[in-house]
Image (cartoon, rainbow, N blue to C red; front, side, top):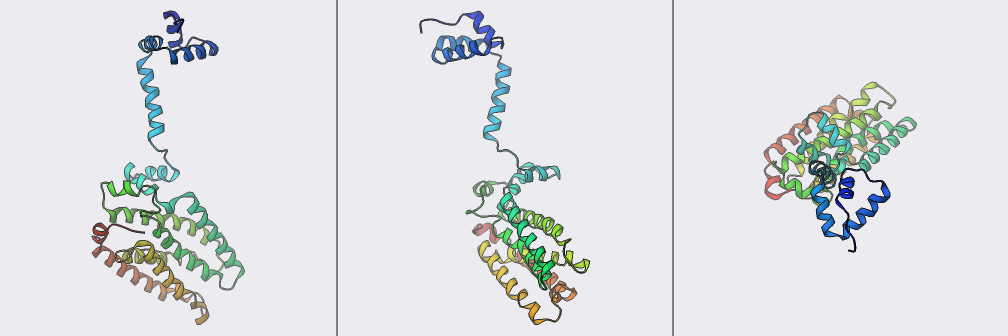
Length: 272
């Protein structure tokens, strides 16, 4: 370097008193001149630099909170738990949009076809099962390795994410169900089946990989519900009182199995 910045110039720069042109020129010089850089470091406002650096570091190293995470924190969930739950693949924007569109088409079918209401109830009951299939596992979960290191059991993480998936589906399907034609009880007729199918998927997941368990439960549900309208005089018979009693029994059995086999999730891990 043929020249060096003098102390007054460096002091003025450190105080923020230089115009843009002179600041840029000095910065270009300081990048290549170690003596001037060292002098400028001595003149810098250390507390201010530390504050700026901490902000930069936080924005780079800490992931931005999603809308789901902010909602979970707002309702009082602990920060580390909210982050694990918010990372659930079946709570992503793409999943929510897909579920919403499916429900919209089902509502349209319910208002235009003779079997539409039954189709909507069957779909709304099945959606949480699909969500549970992708809620936790090495292939789809972006924070799967971090979840394994979290200070909670695999079973607890799975239950939290399954509950979040069920809750989000209940909100979307509940809003869509208000547009169903027919008696008012139809808007809630899918709730108990959805809860029973979700528990059945989790319970079967103690024997099979979670995705396989969801497929088996979903296939069984479709096999039972699909032919029902054609075989029964009442197309909604499967969702009336007798059917609801059956779903309650299934939920009770599934919950019992799940509670007794919870340790299997810890021994073998959770696969998708």
